[in-house]
Image 1 (spheres, rainbow, N blue to C red):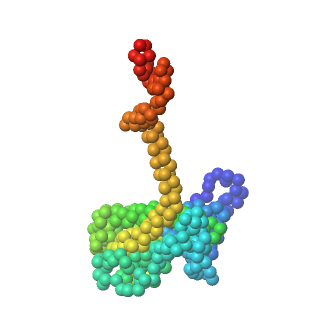
Image 2: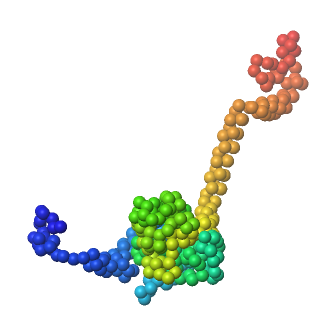
Image 3: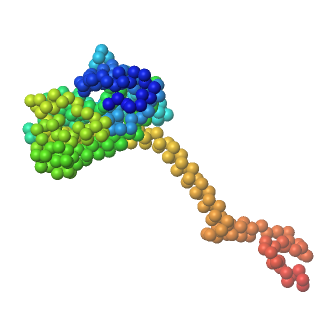
Length: 367
């Protein structure tokens, strides 16, 4: 409806009377932000290259971890080998003050690469029963959930998810490589926690209140085994709002609803498999090792300084208090040998005393 108050727009009655449809709005939004070359993702990527800020939502983190080693060339995403090599040989050692050798830096980048996509994961077939497809070593990288999934050997690998900011995170400049290293180190655990929250929110979907009146599954059991009776994942009314809340949309609705359609239980199994995969464990271990390499010299220095200060304080206290009576013993022993021999041999000469109010040979002197 046109606004009653013109608010300075002289052509508001004419502009507000244009009749259109949702298809036209979809066409405008598609041209604005649908692809990597669209104006809005390009603008966001350019601004991020000038002043990078760490990803905050799960969708942004997912896009970052998937595209950190990828760049856009000839209207497609390809592996950015040059950027990965720069991280291993220059950025990671520089951030660690060159305390982390290049070999261990390469292990960190390899773990990050395998978390996104590991070709070895998809080299073999998964179990025939999707309900038992819980292998941790295969079909458990991030690409098994998103648009890059091309696996035909697994019953649960599919393009379920695409981050809303997917096309804004790619082709990262080498200038800010050290910043991106810090993002990986300090957001890895938070990324895993948000994925776990997405899994919990997915299982808590109430199909009955979302519009699937014929579905008998209860909140907390959605997608567990075959409780959800929806025709497909994209047909379940509670899934897309849950994805949007975490910054996602469907990766490929045609693939999810085609001949090899995917159900809610397939997505839950695959997401759980990714969460408990060895790729996350390896990445966490490499991050911990990297932080240890940086902090170990400083920890040793701090421990040495505290030990030195503690020993100095203990020495001062014990020496002054003479708790062990070492001080008095040393003084008495040393002074006992300082005897004036001439005073012993000379008549009438008083021998100096080592103690107050006590004289040696008083009787002899007064006699």
